[in-house]
Length: 359
Image (cartoon, rainbow, N blue to C red; front, side, top):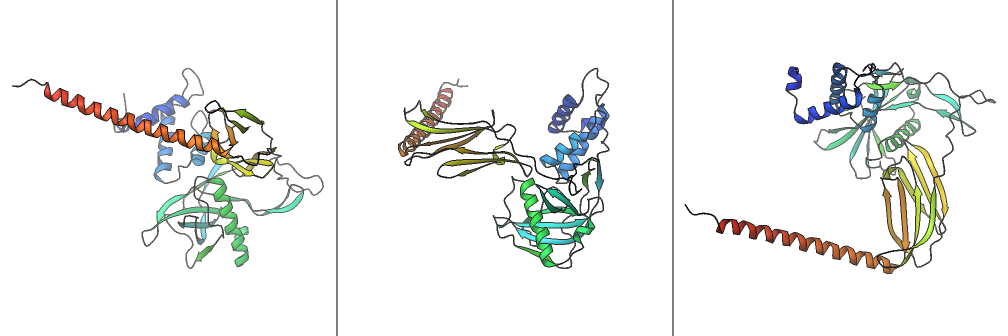
């Protein structure tokens, strides 16, 4: 028997609830989530969507924090930060971006740590999901809530605030690569007499830090060195194309677990440098010797999601001309086929009209 709330759900909501039940319920297992727990999870996800905080990372974090019984793990807690200062800046497309710089004792204070053999100051922060809004003129803007420990924001010097803003910009670009990059000059403006902008500052989920940390033997400071990046499998070879029998140079790099936007390529005369970034950390890095013949140009650059392989191909200009000619022919053939289908459809309709019985 379905509840009144289930009966009022639209088809999309029903499909989403069925998906959750399929993945969080297992017949005959004691740790399976109950119907009530699944519906509660669906409601939380829906509230996140309506509140504008349903980014990929936020949804993933919520799903990972749910036990089979549907109860939140003790490893995370919610905080409500307090606004301190409001910063206005712009992205590369000249869209307005707002940073609500906030404070909370739940975020760790500044700390001197060891990173790659050097003493550095670590400034922990919590960055919320982007929220699309409008300013007083009705123009669109994007708002981020970024939370520091109160000690981090005690220094009100402009140079220090500039450092905090640039740190925030860098973290935004790392966490949300699908968004436009922020302005290259890192220009910003502090809004006077305003501690925050937009809707009420939302609660954020903060993960409890692990109790055990690596400690540097000599200094006694906590160790935060970045793990050495793995070198992925790659291959450079001359191959002959089937379609025109031309010889081309091909580089293939296998990058397991990465998406296209996480792959960065730099070319030099003799090397190809490929860096795979994931959540701001370098996961893969190679410098592949790849000296191209002087006359060769780039023909294609593709990332195949099916096997997470980056493929770069260089060849003579005649190959590019051939590819462009074949693409043009394919487009013309598709257009002709579409026109033939349209004419056939029109003829079929006219035939049906002419052959209809008269009353």
